[in-house]
Length: 413
Image 1: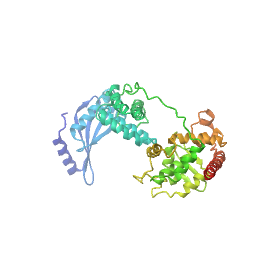
Image 2: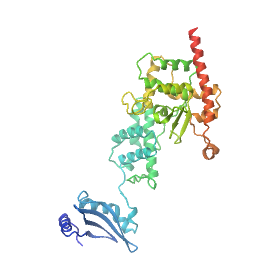
Image 3: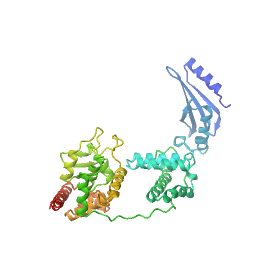
Image 4: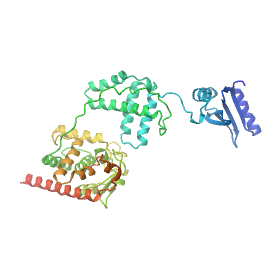
């Protein structure tokens, strides 16, 4: 049978319009037991024309749609059939499991990885997407992902490192390494919705060393804690008020900065004085009773029209980012009006001072949502520990109130 032409297709469409009868056009002889066909169906207002890969297998006919004519022209339908179906048909495999066989590009890999993060509700997906977009522009979006060499990645990272941005260089390396690691695993992952197979042989970022991790040890002593807290209550420079409130809540609760920054009205139970996150950094739900000092502060805040307790100064539809809170604190540190401290140091400070207040370490770990690795905690213990958390927070609240009052009396004297 001869190959189809566009003229034959147009003539067939007119025939179906006139006769009202379905027709099937076959392109060439096909290969093996399959071929490319165009099925024309009369509808009340038009004629539909769908390209199908057709296969005879075990005495049964199977079809899989390729596209619709004319949005998928004849030449493109032939190309897709040859690329994705002809070889499968020749090998006797079912076309039902056939997909796009083109190897993915750098853009395909990075976009699919970000979708994976987003689908798993990872809070880092936006930051990762922003970073990978810049990397893709440098490496070449339309290049095959499997063609990227380690030295190319080194050349992306080195200028960042030489500018003194060591942490950023390590982040870039991490973004690339994570995307390629996911890409290699997704090749045969039936749970992956990626439209591409990347055919990656190795991870080009695997051999690039990471920046040595510096384990922080800084925490605020009692005097420094009071000094920072009082400054946040009455800053000596113009500061977006939600930022100072957010940092005070960090100091009083010991939570992760991202989770406090994104505090929403739906997460606050004013009656029970509980903050409840459905999902956190370690992938598990987390709820804490807050100390009364923090509850009073939260109750004094009117969430904006989008429900955020700590909205961004630039875009009130979004919460303040953890990066903005870091920058805000750095600027005050550089002015010398507050102790030298990072937001992670505040989490460490809470852990330390709450211990001094008499809160047991197990309860401090649970309040801060640290992942507990023992078999009992991971697999069996489903107790919420809410009464124990309340008792711990009550001790901490009493400690902080006494600390603030004591320092104020000393200053007054």
